[in-house]
Image (cartoon, rainbow, N blue to C red; front, side, top):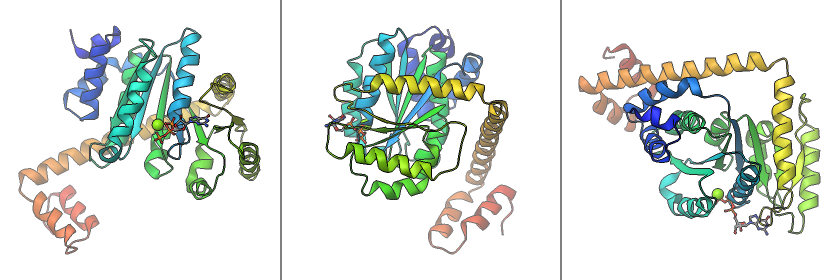
Length: 309
Ligand SMILES: Nc1nc2c(ncn2[C@@H]2O[C@H](COP(=O)(O)OP(=O)(O)OP(=O)(O)O)[C@@H](O)[C@H]2O)c(=O)[nH]1
Ligand SMILES: [Mg+2]
């Protein structure tokens, strides 16, 4: 039986193997994704982002527990843009999550050093979890950099989590996080200053563009589970609101176009780089760019055209 088929039948070990192939960008991954593609697109993908230590994993764990109790299945992806440095923390996360039993499938995926690696592997990992029959997919990423914003582009609903005392985070909010949030969560509501942080957030949001969906600011104490039900409700309300939105069809087309464009770019890039390596031009060009003898854009032209300049 093919790995894709086994994933569709809910085989957890097959799912784990397929995710590893996707993460490593193994050539076989393409075939698996092709086999399962028709069985994807039904799950609710929830992105959870925010600065380190605000309580994202605790919140994810509680949300998973909430959905499980409602008889739904959950897949969790911890997306780590800088894995070589935080592998230890993720391992701790994983152990914590596995306490939830078989209704939850938890997995972390790392960048593996390749540029754009996460942009490639994240949507495929989501598809695998969908094919494996997960109703909700929770996607945790750290921070507020461009790669996190990109990863959150794959979520239907994005939760931006903050903790009392915005402080340095205000800077992060300028970096586009305010725009991507569909639901704002002030976690650690048991700590002093939580109400003020919520007020500050609401004020910042009121300055933003008017959208059909007004992102709510909700408070939680993830450690005790306080406020988790409201978050789950807001996620479902956001989904319903998106479905009522007449623009949704257009957005799906845009999304499909973005995926297709990305897949074309990847395939062209892979072919051009392979050709340059085969002809022995790749390593010298890398060297020339490294020593600033050649501009990367010109070096890329040479690789794409196959002609020496
Ligand atoms: N007081 C308080 N502490 C909390 C709450 N939620 C989480 N914490 C604690 O905050 C710390 C960080 O929680 P995590 O869930 O690991 O935070 P995170 O955002 O996933 O962290 P990174 O993945 O490392 O960015 C842990 O010690 C939690 O126990 C809360 O509601 N109140
Ligand atoms: Mg975490």
